[in-house]
Each structure stands twice: as structure tokens, then as C-alpha cells.
Length: 477
Ligand code: NBP
Image 1 (cartoon, rainbow, N blue to C red):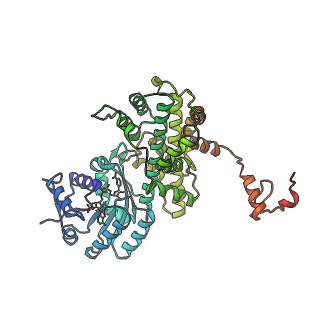
Image 2: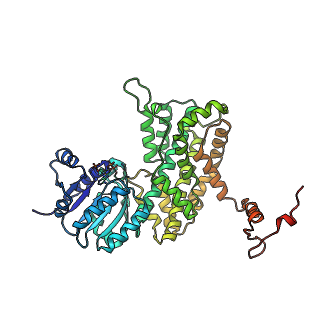
């Protein structure tokens, strides 16, 4: 019997769809799942009548694959991934390749690449984005590891990936854990855009008094513009239109206002802090989730600390897509991408990833959760200038800032006066204002640090490191 082209471990939401995708693209497959009943259910259900067979034991699974073996693991990140690697390793032979498609922490991937390659196996850490539908129809994939390992799966992943005008949404990212690093940043940007759209919804609801249908109409308008046309705006409209079949009430209004933040969003912010990258809009979205989960405390605090009353202010007209609010959402979305790209640029230097920024923008244009028309502009900006320090200074983005900043200012000011939290919108304004200010007040921070701790400081009028005996020369009234 001929051996199968491709093996998949982990028949969860993603694994099931990815193996159907591979099979549809001409790769006969073998599947393995820890709980065998799931394998049986799959083979009798969605996998029936296809070039997919199952295996109950890992040894049998490995034996059914052509060499060098290409095995995709789609299991929970962390100890589960290590457990699978440990269990399958005794059955692998030189040149066989393991691909981790889960949301692994990039340092775990660095370790696994080294470990597996020292045993003459190949190892690819591959971020996969697109949810269950993307996994089936064509996801965006971010594979990192040794180039020769990538070449062994290039044909497979290029066929499985989403396709856009200039090619498949997959490309070699770089060595080690770079693929998972890029996926982590992708998810950080995803957190931010979700929060930005939620803040816009909150303002339209609480200040504008708009209902779900009216807000959904605005999302539809935004989705027809170059600046905001995106998968996340599209699904926001869909979510807002969904009604409970029992009572006709919008389902969104019945959902508990708590969101978790473990994993990739957290890792994005931790990496940014470690690398000295400024990502305030992304951080604000993470913190918004932390605050959201403190539901009981918020309920208590609302009855203790009196809140500002809502003072109506102009969010815009529905027929022109709530122009000032749209300005604010566009700039916060741009800031989220800019911060993510900046974080990757810094990480690329620090970890020698040699990331190709236009290529990353290209593979995010289709299949993934943050796909948007804006990514074409981002790709163009980095194609024009591979060393661009920040997207905000590319001419097209400068024009956006100049055209829209007064809208962002008005929206943030109005929200502040009404006591409505807009963490992503307000931190975007601070981000842009800080970035376009050549002299910030950190001169005083440096003076204080030198005053209490002799930390020294640099001067703008002479070269060197200086210390002042502040208590002697400074005057106190
Ligand atoms: P699911 O939660 O649907 O499935 C998890 C799979 O992991 C199951 O097949 C489960 O086997 C297996 N597994 C676990 Br849990 N512990 C295991 C262990 N110790 N040994 C062997 N197998 C184990 O996950 P999913 O949503 O398909 O996600 C899979 C990976 O892809 C995760 O890393 C996730 O973060 C990532 N991801 C998910 C999405 C998404 O939209 N869902 C998108 C992108 C990436 P069992 O059946 O025996 O429990």
C-alpha cells in the first residue's frame, strides 16, 4: 500500500480542518489523536470517503507516512506539545520533520528546534491564523526554523494557504522561533483591533444612543472603506446583527463583559517590554481585558465612586460613517499595526531573525484574523523602505494622521468628559503625540534619578556623562 504524504496529530478544531484542507489539495493523509474515539468519529464523519486514514498508535501512524515524514502537530501549546514530541521521537528517522502549528511560546520553539535538529530531525514552528474556517479554506501561515526544513514543506503549505493577488499567504519567516514570534505579534495586533472596535461600539451605544442594527450599519460602512475594510470589522457587523431566537434581543447584549488574556497577547506585551519596543495601544487592549475580568470589583466600585455623567458629544453622522469616530478608529488601527511591525523590527535585530517586513504584511493580507486592506499599504511602505523605523512616518500614513488626528482628539476628549474608558483610543493619541514630540519631559525624570540615586545623565549641550550634587546647588523654598 502506498504511504501517505502528510500526517496530522491533534484532531481539534484546527487539526480537523487543516487535514481536510491538505487532502483537498492532493496530499493523502494519516491522522492521530490522543483520544482515539475522536479519530474514529472524524473518519466516519467529515473524513469519510477521503484519502485520509487513521492510526490508533503513534508507531503505526509514523509507519504509514512516506519519508521524509511531514507531521503537523495541532495540539495545545506548552506541556502537551512537549509530550507529543517525546512520545513520537522514538519512531522518527533522520530527516523526518515535525511542524508545530499551535500557538507556542517562541522561546519554547527555539529550544525544540535546537533539540530536534541535534537528533537529525527537522523542526518547524509555524504560526497558523484563520480560525476553523481559515484552516479549512486557506489560513495564513508563519513557518520558522531551518530554511532546508521549510523547503521540505513549501509545496504543501503554499497549496494549503489562502491565496491573494500576489501569492499564497505563507512564506519562510526566519530561523528558530521566528514563526511563532510573528504569530504572537499578529495576535497582539488582533487583541488591539478587537478592543478598538469594542470602544467604538461602546461610544455609539452609550453616547450616541444607537442600537445594534445602527452600529452594525456603521461597521458595514467602515468595511467598505480602504482604511477599515477588514475581517474583524466584517465579523463585528455580523456579531452585532445576531439576535436571540427566543426573545429577539441582540445576543451581544447578553454576553458577560469579561475577556481572558493569557497566552499570545500577554507574550506580545512582555516581549515588547523586554525588547524596549513601545506598544501602548496593544498593551491597553491587554489591560482592558484584565480590567474586564475584575467584574465583581467593578460592580462594587460603581456603587462607591460616583461616575461622570454622560455629556453628549458629536460622534459623527451615520450617513457619513460617523466621521470623527471613524478617524479615531482608523488611527488606533494604524497605531496597532505600527507598534506590532516596530516590535518585529526590533526583535529581528535582537534575535537575528532577518525578518522580511513586506513579506509578513503580504502573508497577513489573506486567511488570517487581522487581514485587511490596510496591509497592502503596510506592504508598500516597507517595500519602499526596508529600514522604515516606524509606519507612522511613511508618507501615506503621515497623510492619514494629519487628516484624522483632530477626529481622534475630539473623540478622546468627549469620552474623557463623559467618564467612558477608551484605553486604546486614548493611548493611541498619546502614542502619536509622544512620537511626534522631539523633546519629552524625561529630562526631569533623569534629574530626579540623579538626585536620589546618582544615576548620572547626558546633556544636550555637551558630550559625556554628568552628575550634579542637586541637594547642594538646588534651592528649596
Ligand atoms: P482544541 O482544543 O480543539 O484541541 C486540542 C487538541 O490537543 C486535541 O486534539 C487534544 O487531544 C490534543 N491534546 C491535548 Br489538549 N493535550 C494533549 C496531550 N498531552 N497529548 C496529545 N494531544 C493532546 O485545539 P485547537 O483549537 O484545534 O488548537 C490547537 C492549537 O492551535 C493550539 O495550540 C491553539 O492555540 C492553536 N490555534 C488555535 C486556533 C483556533 O482558532 N482555535 C487558531 C490558531 C491556532 P484530545 O482530543 O485527546 O483531548
